[in-house]
Each structure stands twice: as C-alpha cells, then as structure tokens.
Image 1 (cartoon, rainbow, N blue to C red):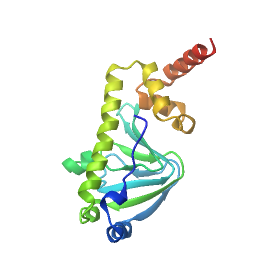
Image 2: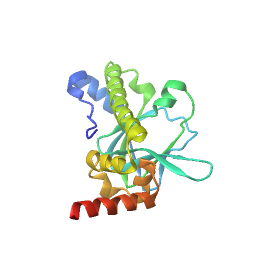
Image 3: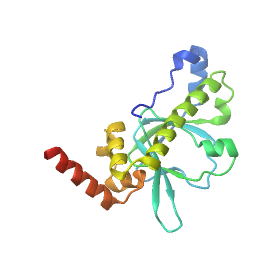
Length: 189
C-alpha cells in the first residue's frame, strides 16, 4: 500500500464541530529519541503528526528490537490494543526526528458526533496497512519485502537508518546490505 489517506473533515464535521475538535488539541514537540509513550503505559490518546518521524518499537528481553510501524507527516494513530482491551501498551513510540504533534485525549474525542466516522476511518487505514504487511511477512522474501518498502514509502528510505529499516522488515542489517548490493547489481547489468 502506498497511501495512508488522511481524515477528510469536510465529509463528517461542520465548522462548529471542527472548531470544537481543535479546542481539544494539545500541541507537543518531541526531540529525537524522546518517547511519546513507553511499553507498559496506558496511552488513551490519538496522535496526529504535523511534522517529523516516529517509530513504534518492540524490544524483546534479549535486546532485539522490532519496528512495528513508522509514523510521519499527516499520519494519525492510536494504540488500538490499549483502546480495545484496556491493557497497557505493548510497544513504545519514539521520535526519530524532531516532531511536532497534536495530541487528543480519547475521552474528549468520544464526545464529538464525528468520532464514530473518524474512528472507522482510522480502523480502515490500519487494517489495510496491517493486512498488507502481514501478507508480505508471511509470503514475501526479504528482497520482496524491501522492494515493497521502497515502492510504498520511497521517502522513508532516505529518512530512516538502515538498521531500523531492517528491523521493520524483520531481517538483519547485514541481509539488508546484501539485498541492496544485489538490487544495485541487477539495475546496473
């Protein structure tokens, strides 16, 4: 999937509702390596990325790190697992670049008449992303996963360090380096 469609306010909120929504927004800036939330927290909030790049990461007991997702300009996200189960977050969200965010408390958003439509949109976007990634991880070779990453998120390749791309793809940095060399040789020959 190459697109993450933004929420279209004009379809669901009139000017008064949009103004009320914006009154709930709390601006937040994060410097690189700052966490928005840690695994174990209870993040009852929705985040809109105005500027910057974040990662959702899972760190295993042995120190291995996996990237669940990247979030960048225009993305809106929340911890669906926490929202649906009430359980603590299973992953941390950390800034990779300086970030400018809008934070909304879910309790506030639930009072808006546009919330059910907005929530349905968020679920649809996340489901499309998760279905695509799950299928790719189950059936795609490491090279196919990397090629999909390049095709789907071309701007991220330059913004994200190699070891984090590898962690997102479920491969080692050495494997990613080999794949890049192989693709470069194919493109030159």
